[in-house]
Length: 167
Picture 1 (cartoon, helix red, strand yellow):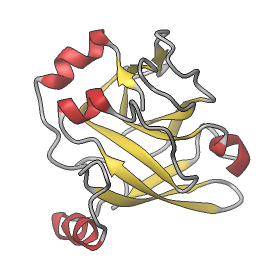
Picture 2 (cartoon, rainbow, N blue to C red):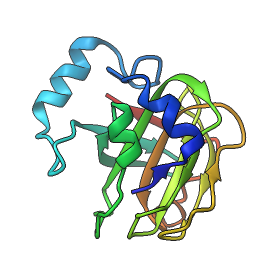
Picture 3 (tube, one colour):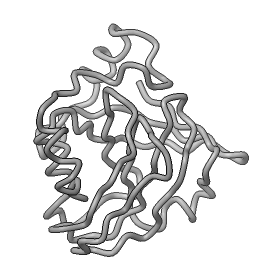
């Protein structure tokens, strides 16, 4: 998985994201808790939620791990050697920010999707380079980052302006 750059990691370590409040797709605390209880925690011990991306042609379903705490966000998908096509990791932020990630210690290439608070995709960094220290940034303040297997965004026709929702 990507590691958040040092410039972003320190502020992230200072807070813990308790839920996905303010992001499209979450209708209530009860719904989010019910969904999390229905899905087992991941092998890494993270909560998982159902996520969908609506494109002009289809809706694509994923099960994603939620990087809730600053430590979980800093670790991300680092050191993982595989990521199934229908899996990913989501990084919800309590406040909108220009997000900056890097691929240090990330073994597999990823598509990094930057999502606005209203659930629309702001931009996509496709096929990021494993182990790279080059920052991968959003173009504007965003609320959430989604990481999926490299090439999946193009394969599924996912593009800026499409809508992401999760429970």
